[in-house]
Length: 488
Length: 99
Figure 1 (cartoon, rainbow over the protein chains, first blue to last red):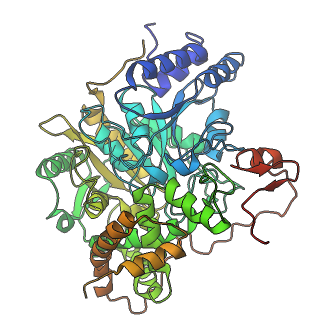
Figure 2 (figure 1 turned 90 degrees about the horizontal axis):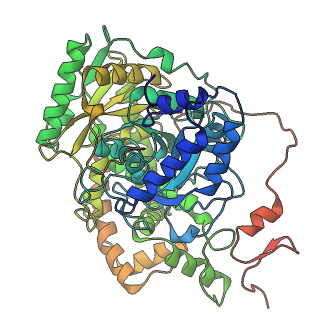
Figure 3 (figure 1 turned 90 degrees about the vertical axis):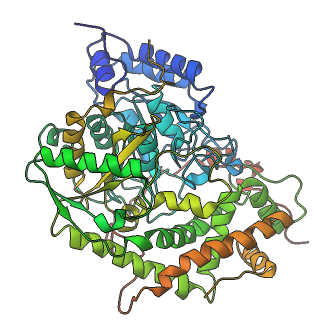
């Protein structure tokens, strides 16, 4: 038997279970790789250190063959971890240590995983580049002049750079899939309701879902299986049985019908992204899938609908941050009202304020019908586009992002330009459908490109199966970025 | 129709949102919100006659659970996360409101 493969979920799990290595050793090595490599990348807001080592040592005392035994996992900093700072990369939550664990944290720990740190993100998950963070931007391990995407950029960097084989992010409009695409990883946005949101700091409650980042589809399936399922603490966690995602993998895509919305791809998509997409579609076809042209007539309205609905929900959800119960409060306020308004002005960054302002406006008297209600009606039309498409096809394929990774600073001054990065991802959130991003190529400059596959509601299996078959037919997953730090 | 915003309108929205904005922020948002809303106005050209709004993709499926007593968060731990707690009184302290 060779040395255990400490770069993968299964390599670690099997080595820890068979006692070739201890969970504590794995954890120590993960902490060393973070110490060695995160200085230039800024993936983490908090590294767990001693607490993680103690938990790993406790695991080593048990013989239970847990499904993620000893696997270090990085978690986006908008997911509550009991007794460990959870800030959503916002000043307004500086120092906040939640008195409870999110359901996904409890489930990962029950599965034997070790939470090794909290990852950087756009403040309250609002952004597409991790530049809206009170802790400064994360850098793309493929080229540190470029953004890793966002909002779950730190989670993507943690996996791409080799700090952990898996991470959790949250996806409200593409915040798992787009950074997965930008960092050459697999990222899954599960069906709305598949994963409990209890303990996820709410941004837009009807859109938010937690999901995994990994290097391969099979690893993503294993992490998703560990966190999915109904939860009495979240009434929107659906009472749907969680299928054996992993058991569905390893097969082919023969007979699978893949829908391609060609008209949607006619403009605004980068040439290199289109070339990679078409090559990926050719591969799926060569593997036995049938490509079918589909129409998604309302897809072009998805961005405005998303930014009206998401900001409206955000303006309501973020009303709770007022300096009373958590985190930051302004110095010496003279009145209660001044405490509220000044705490919020000093505590929130510009993008969060912009979205609270926009959301407050679209919900305000006189504008509600014209913006919010109208957006919700168009949301129905966007969802029905997919219902119609899924009468003909089993999957919908498109690029995850219309462009490859962009440079840090390039879009900061123009919020609308930043919003357009989400053009292919927001529809899955608006309709609730599951979607996955899998690596499908690189630009001439060596930056990753992602393929997005969308399935029917609660049919993650079909997209995982196709993603896995595609991954095994290509070699994108085997590449490592220049900033990769291998566990020693 | 092109969307225009006045500084007064931005200040009115900020008050509704309990945000105290600096002069520069008022200026920036006056410009940016107008641009974003002008872009968002394309939804108003879509015919939605008779189309029901979607507030939630799960619809109205009941997800009740039995109403049984179970432990909640410890009060002391919740208060410990606040900027100015009064654990003895079991309260969050805020600036004086009355008198």
